[in-house]
Length: 236
Image (tube, rainbow, N blue to C red; front, side):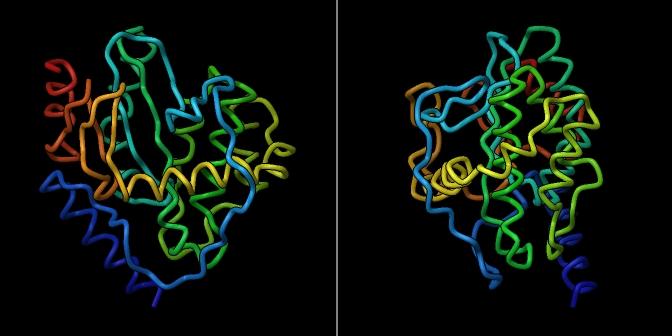
């Protein structure tokens, strides 16, 4: 069964790489999904804009918004192909990268709620070490857990931060119920819509991940075509 899941995931990734479509669907699956019941935070804290539903990295005039799931293999493929381009643009002061973590692939982590826990870990970094959001986001896609696996444990999520010299987030993860609830609420809203960027509607809803917008314009090219994405980033 696991081999079959891997084969299906590989087919989905290959299709997304060729067509540029968002490759991880928001619906389907039958694994139990832990539901966070805490009250989601509001306002801003560190790099996290809870009301805007994103974490920010950088301060450039151009904005890039990415809706992603930490277990989505196509999100991993997009990061592998285009992560350096985005990181360089952030570090050069050209781009503000706004990360919108989603949790729909909780259904693909054997009841461990991995996508939700990974989203909460990213928020922990955003709150406690706000300048390292991009570093930790990239670390989530290093040796990315496969769909159908348990994902990383909270201890492993904390270690990915400490290995990078990021603030210890283990205690934050222990009490991350509000952050988990925030990520799950954002996922529900992403399917209901509308999706707004800076107060302007840009999409009816998020159809799958990764969904990538540059200054409010959706990138629809091949996920793996680094030159095409770089051109799109430069021209919008």
